[in-house]
Every structure is written in structure tokens, then in C-alpha cells.
Image (cartoon, rainbow over all chains, first blue to last red; front, side, top):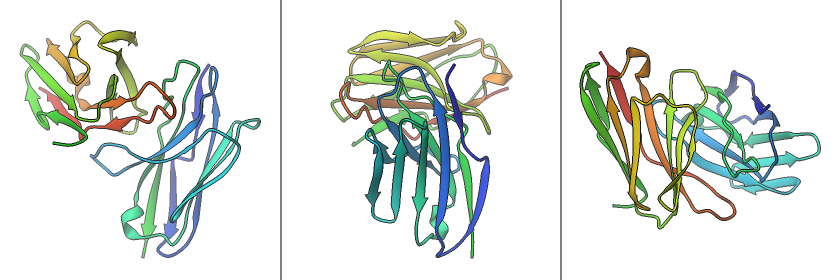
Length: 109
Length: 113
């Protein structure tokens, strides 16, 4: 079957660093996306990994290990506006995104 | 207009009503998607259209009927819905080539009374 596992909720402090982990099992694999979703809004694209390793994009970085079925999203210099849900979504053999329930990140001052 | 637009943004309907949700993408993509998002649940893929042809129908009840007249427009026709159908309905589009990134519209918040 297809399965995504992420922590349900995390709390971090403004200015700090937080790492959100994701493990996945899919029928085939064609890359992995991270999306950000603020409450009541649509998901927006953050990052895409198709090869093993780290992709850096400003304050956000994403890592992938295909052999371990594992990815993480690293957020640095946290800001209050980073309070949102973060969705890990691998792309399966049919090029369909498989969605987990996401990780709700709460940033405290 | 840019990106993916959806109308209406909010909809309240009775169980006997018929209504339609509209999605339009201005990105030149050739795949479009309908998702349902209920509170604290993962996004549920409902329908996929590639080049106007429906390629996925994930066991969605027949009270939801999609229509894709061209690669830029997507509709979701609703009739005799149930209260449990109340949710955020999201439309997305993508290119059918790497990286297959999906761009989402703002969604329609549907309440069935």
C-alpha cells in the first residue's frame, strides 16, 4: 500500500531551526514534494527532490534518501508567518501525488 | 488573471440543490485535478484529467460529476449532496512532464445543510 508518515504537530520558537521528518511507502517513486498550507488556504509549493541529497532554497532546505524512503524539510530563522501545515507528498509510478495529513507547525515568540 | 482560479469561494447548499464549482487555469498546463480536503485529513484525490480525458476516478460517489470541456477549464457538478460532503474543494493543474508540480487554486469552501 501507499503510506506517508509525518508528525502531527510540532512547536518551535521564532528565530530557531526546525526539522520536519517524513517517511513514505509508495508504488513506484518519481520524486517528492513539500508543500506549505496555511489554515483555510490552498497548498503552495516549497520544494522538490528527485535525487538523493539536499536541496536548499533560502531559509528552507529539503533532503531525500530514496533507499530509506525518507525526507525532511528544514526551516531556518523561523518567522511567525511560518506557522502552517507542511505536507510531504511523494509522486508515485502514475505521477500522482500521495498526500499525508501533514505536520502542523506552531511558532511561538 | 494568473495561476489557478476557482469560483465560488464559498458555497452553502441544501441537500436537494444542484450547483457547480468552476476552475480555470492560466498556466498552459495539460492536467487538472479535483481534491477534497476535510478537517485534519489528507487531501483526497477525486478526479484527474489529462488532455481533457478523465484518467482517474477514485471511487467518488456519483453525486459528484466532473466535466472538462478543454484543458483550461474544469467543473465539478454537485447534486443531492450529504452533510458529510462539506469540505474544502481544491482544484489543481500541472504539466505532464518533470517535475509534475501541481499548482492549486484557492479552493471552494462548501457547506451542505
